[in-house]
Length: 110
Figure (cartoon, helix red, strand yellow):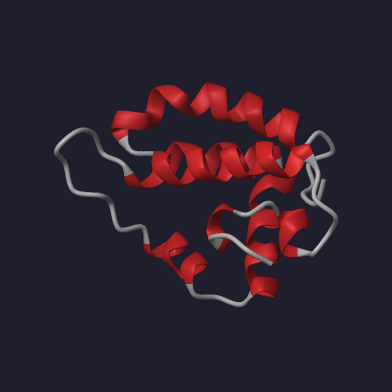
């Protein structure tokens, strides 16, 4: 397994054979990370303790956390509203649609 775990697709974390969907899912996680941390040009990154552990926790826990986030549309929408920075709030509709494309059954591991 190679990559930065918070940005890796769930399937990649599960050691599934690589798929182009893993690349799209990785893009989703990078954009999600930016939206919860980036407050705009020249501003400090937000320190989101609820997601900081993604850098350090076990692969199994990270898989559960990611699956929990994307498996329930309403929960994902709530998390987006609460944690996306003001600067990135306009991306919420885009992220909601991207979530539906990347996780069509509401589950990870494509």
